[in-house]
Length: 148
Image 1 (spheres, rainbow, N blue to C red):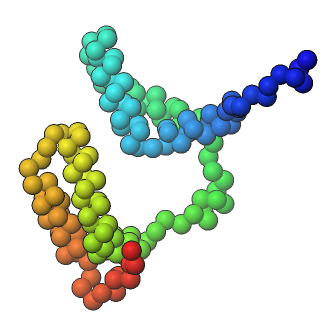
Image 2: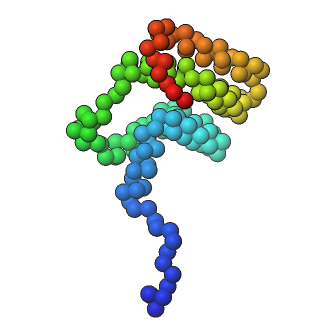
Image 3: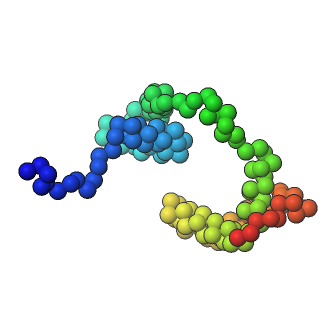
């Protein structure tokens, strides 16, 4: 009879999968900040203000991160962080791309509009910031290799 039963289409995540998801989320500063803000708002709404709510949740967040597996030391040595020159190169290459500038400007203005309401002349303001970034890039064209 068991052989005649339909096979499940969905497999449940393993404990290792869940641990990875939790640890990935716990290691994200953006998620930590947003989650802390939201949880403190909910606690305040339902229970009233909790002194140092963000600090208490930060300590809880640190305890969760402490339980996550650490990558082997040899792996950490293999993953080299980019040098300041490499970061400058990437930023300047992106800043010199008109297509990236247009898309990034649109995205920034959409996000600002979504979170803070319409900002008059948003595109013009973001373009000014973009120009400031480009002004910091080397003038000798050594980073002008981006092809988009």
